[in-house]
Length: 349
Image (cartoon, rainbow, N blue to C red; front, side, top):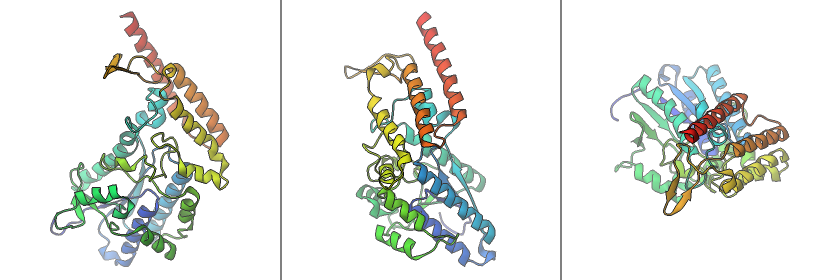
């Protein structure tokens, strides 16, 4: 990309420390510009998988609302949206409706459907409307050795910090805090009030309670390894890719015992994943699969799916907040009826 351009910025905002710092810097930049120079449209894009850790999802949505409200007051060219999965591709519709086994490292079906696809669709729409877009990411080399390798592999030979996105045509990636250390991030947030009001104390306290770390905005399979790892612990409360949900346990340890049923349910989902009595013999397409001499079981049985839903609704009642929507439950039951009819047709054929 060269020459003068006015392509919109898309600021990915997860609500974590790094994306909050980027949001802070972008907001400050706009405030410092005279109104006549505020010509570039800025879009804040957050993602909610609908199974996010409840306190993190609440913080992300509340902070984004604060940002957008302040932008309206200051008449800044900022808009924003929270992307969510398609109704047919939510975690519960796929797991309880279609019977997908709980995700693990070898079958992580959730990342693309819950994170990548919704956010990529939002970005693609902005590119279609504007010709191109610049994605502003709060990634840093200091996060991990794997992150450093990933960032350096995408940098230009001249080490410029604006590079084409690997899979989204017309998208360019800008990483404004790529060389900052974790200490740099925390020192800035602790020393400066956010330009949209209030303070960063709530964010800092979340990290203290949850022992730190967050799942980033994921835009491609290259980013996927950062989702569902022990080094990125703010993520989906249903995540069975990790061995233990350290962040949610951290909230419980400081007195938020309403999250205990969620932890127990998540652990139970991991435990029943490979129990043969809960899995169908055939895959969803009706095939009996043998791989390397080993039978590959199909989805959860209808009986198992009903059991999971009943247990989830009990957890929801104990927790006191909505974990699965009525719309999802209706769609799930429709899928069950369809699966039962399909199985009956195959049996009679």
